Length: 484
Ligand code: UTP
Image (cartoon, rainbow, N blue to C red; front, side):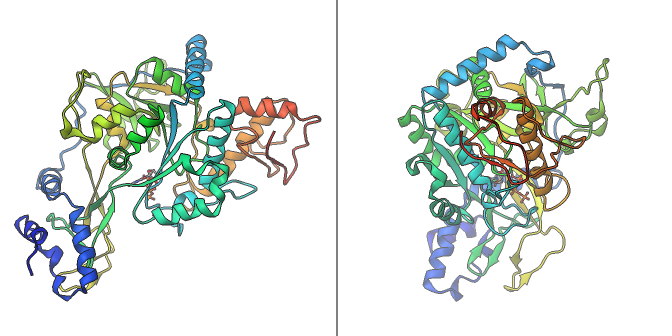
């Protein structure tokens, strides 16, 4: 059986993809051909050469690395007037409808081990609201506050797209206008064995997996989301991950810093909690902003201190960014030329190699159950766009106001730690508003209560809403503050 696509795979040394083709039903053959058509063979060939060939796995280039500068918060010595100006600028952008929210929700969530899209995971302490609902309510509340409902882009994967859409449908889009919530799938990449041969998951199925959160930039372009933004007059995207309910999904100060600096891509940092915290580090190299993963930064550098005792590489990345629409286009379409006066060449994000256990079949069609990595997945990371950004700005945020992800089933960054961090935040807000709440030494309240983002989604909006209550309620088990 010949087919132009099969011949292409044969010429590329990937004939094994069609090894069982003759045994498949006509429908299964077509499905396999459709999957194969998704694969850019030249890209796989290039990645095999760059990332798999012997000696290819050279370490990360650390030459000329310096800590990245960042904007300190006012209480850490930053200029209060500059932060106030940023806030005003961000609020103006929100009032004029220039900003949309963007959630990447295409990950596989293997560490959490939850059956279903991660965004449907129940996360809040009292009501058990799913992650998607928390973001939806924050976005709704911000829209109401600034008199301009926001659009929300959600990137899914092939595996969770239908379930994600069905979930929103079943919950009435959590009160958001359907027409402003946009789902699109991210791209997929085939896994290969250590010789670079594309793996099959079954006789008629290629081992395909999501292409990493960095794939979001080309998926935004390919899905028509950037064109939609342009039609709607949106030029600024607030990027966050699906696993972090604490995130200030719509943060006027952050948006304002980004806009005032005419930045292509901006980021939030938190001071590392301890020298070897497992986060990416914001650094500058040859005049460009880069994120160096903890695993690539020698421990001695992770521990380096300034003369005043502060950590030298202190700026930890928490995967929260603001992106400019046209910058995304430039990254998404590297071949399209048109760097249009930017002075920067168009750039594609690099792929990273991750050695993983891949469910696959062997040459005889028997399933292999690997107990150690048997293949390689290729992924892009969104922070790899930073070196190509003009005027990138990094601002400091308070960890307790922006970051407590659910990554693992137990232990650090688990549902339990995230629940406790939400409760601590609610307690801090109550106190900031002048209310009383009993906590332990870590600030964890002794009662389980909950604040809906529709009541207050940051300290300021909470304090305003609380003060409108006459009299304010006692904080007790089961208290739920829903709307002001
Ligand atoms: P993680 O790096 O935590 O990966 O994703 P993950 O797939 O969710 O979880 P594990 O590693 O399998 O346990 C960080 C964020 O990036 C998104 C995730 O949905 C999450 O919001 N992501 C990750 C994507 O959207 N696509 C990807 O291909 C990878």
